[in-house]
Image (cartoon, rainbow, N blue to C red; front, side, top):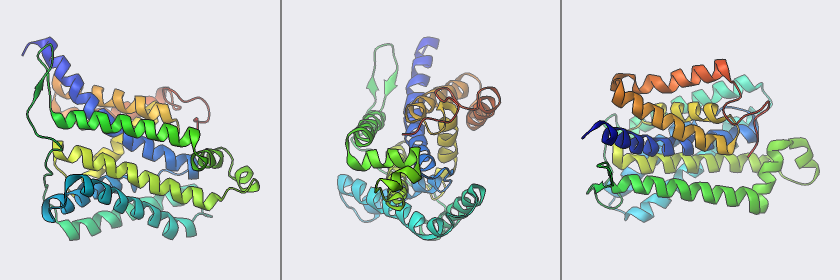
Length: 295
């Protein structure tokens, strides 16, 4: 494989992992826009999605498509439960306290997952085989990569339609812009925040499920994926929906090129180096301006 083929392969790999970062970043943004906090429990939504999928597909032998939606519903419920329980009762506290609370919730969920599933990495079958597809130029792509791209695009389109065309989506956008004004026109702010956590849980679950056949999954796989998704959200412009997508793909490509051309040992460091550079040079991110745009 010559240099140009290697670059093409790195870009394909980067786009694949970048799609995961984009989905995770959108989950961070949805909760930030609704509440103003950083929900670090988002990391556990990714892990739970993968482990739920493993439980249903591998252990219980439930058909894949049914397992996908059951797992997504399960993590959606966990997201709603987090908001309905500890976070709602602590909402009057300072933002920093709520952020630390999400860190505590994240640790609790991770500990529970470790007790239930153990510490081993486990695999999930690919959605439609593992025969590589050869592309023009010498690069190859696995069918699971195509599933990742397809599901990511579908998620983007569904979310765009939801926020632009549905009453619930418009109510969530109104709540993100001004909670008090939204309440005055009859929008239930509590319900919108609850739905934001549920939706964020669903996005985390999707990310965890579609990456699992490529990288395996475990009780703590969401930590690094979640933090990189957060870095992607910052890179694109925290709170900016389109920025999350752009930031995810840019970060994925930079990470893949860095690992391939320099050393795979620096793969994880690249995301946090990018995060630091953005915070120093342009804290609002690529598509941010002043106060980040709300979804």
